[in-house]
Length: 203
Image (cartoon, rainbow, N blue to C red; front, side):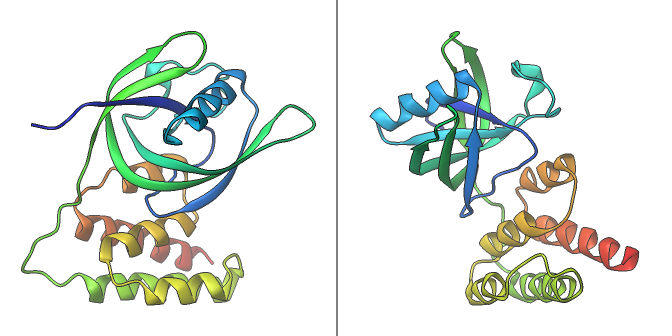
């Protein structure tokens, strides 16, 4: 029996947040700001979900993906122009089971989703290979700092490595969302490697 949790939901344009990522977001929509103000009163956790189309200003249930990331707000800063800058950390994949828009902000019910890993299989070699591919790409396009690569090399959890690499690769939102929704860690790593191989061949 999975416990059903309910939290405010923040639809995101042009970004998929993965667990263990820390990301700054600029939030300008009234509903999203209200959702953030709401979670700051309690445990600061909020569900972040990518929009299918970033141009929709007032997304409905059908405009967002069915899986999101339960996240913690680490910092919230109100900017002079009325927008809010937040620093968020992804915590856990969740499947959204119910969506409700109460005019002030959106809330959702969700179930936490756990990684699937075959106990008898060591995924570290694939994970290390993914990091190496990212490093090779980085040496070409210089988009990622060497600190980031070094941090990745120190990780020992294949799922965490997959998510971290996925957050850095160049891919469309729908491709990233597909990786995000891949619960099987081996499949997730392979999908990430494939995208990087395609990018390398383009370069």
